[in-house]
Image 1 (spheres, rainbow, N blue to C red):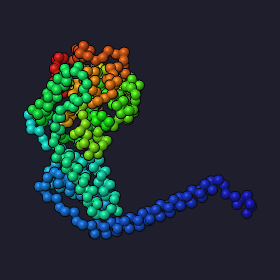
Image 2 (image 1 turned 120 degrees about the vertical axis):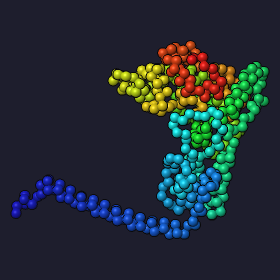
Image 3 (image 1 turned 120 degrees about the horizontal axis):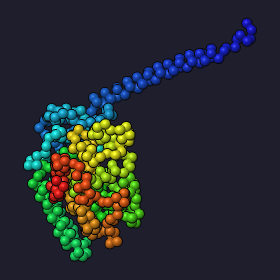
Length: 471
């Protein structure tokens, strides 16, 4: 054989390498499966030994109270975590109607979330019904505490039990908390002159009106939401002990500027851009605290909410989000609205979502089967701030914004030089949305459509004593 015949051509080399590579890969996969089976066997054997030695979980009677169920449930969860059992889906809701059998089954299955089902969709609220009992739901904060309990296996049993009992006591304290929170008289010791007398009288009337409304119509804000959701729109300023519930299109941008100055984050409200206010993540929200932190602040801080005529606020939101270029509202809301409510829409409008008409926007708002969900800019104040569950100490209105805001700054002892800004930092050349502007937008709607908008914001109109001049 000639030497030239002994040299392998490239094709043969490639095939040889490929065969050896496949063989090596198959061997590796076989070894990996074998190792995993051996490891799984050892883990399962240890788990069985732990389960055999673990004390049995006491049965939960079917007639015990809600708090006892939650405590028993928390106990099961802690044991499961400490024994290294499988993962738990913390966020899985309880499907269907919560019968006693399902509650028992749910506790047994170690799901750490318990709540009562909300009313079926489409069911109207009964304004004359009695106020339902407040039900608190264990959420991510308390779950975090339970997880930490399960991981501290090195602590003595007594210390674990004491820590678990403290968590249960705190949760029980929240569960027994009176809702709504009792209204407290405003501390007016820091008000330095008499020019606020009329403003103060107006403020007392608003507080009393809202309190009487909530007493009369106790079933208006049914407390079915989780505590952390209820306080998710509330901003915290610890230095002056303020809680401010954000209502978009009611002066919230400038209120956030005020909070940033009070926090020492900026020397002046005029130096803070719109993006820094809304996207800077500089301010703390109440849902970022644990249960004790929320409880303490709700009961000791001055709570404020600023509202606006619902129809005026709605038109303001539409003008801001749909009449100017917007990289979020046009593609997310605009495209869906045009697709559903505009017959024979052109391709360009369907692709970019620009040019939504006010009448189309109203059809979306009033549709029980909206193609896209609600947004905080036109959501009801009753669902943003829960004013019949959280008794606000101060109720300001956009119609008297500067006067109300500056009086509030006096009440909380803000620096004398700090005044509420009156500038408009977006679309400053546009006319502010007022009653006259609103009428221009409503003229293309039928009387029935205007009435339906009023019905949609019915609770906001009632609880904040707004009239209905646009019908």
